[in-house]
Length: 146
Image (cartoon, rainbow, N blue to C red):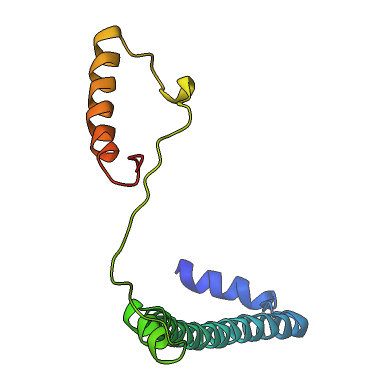
């Protein structure tokens, strides 16, 4: 019975139906449209950047291949056999029959060249090693007074 009474009481008062105003509906549609538009634009930009990235990687690979080819050309053009061939054929040069080396003794030895000062036994051993090494040069005919 309570239900019937409630219905009767409600029938006395008109039921208020709350309607959303039209501007709220339009605002919601516009907001959803902007979100969809932003999502689509971001995907388009990402795809465009992806294609640019692939193009740049392809160009990088092409430039690396070209760099390797140029390095090969430099090595080929500066090879000693090629230079010798040009010297003989175009410039009329020839190889020497005898190769002579001229060795010179240093005029003075700087004392501040060593990072750490040497002890007396180390200095003697270094001096003996250097004198034996340089003694071999003094036997060359270039250093002998003839």
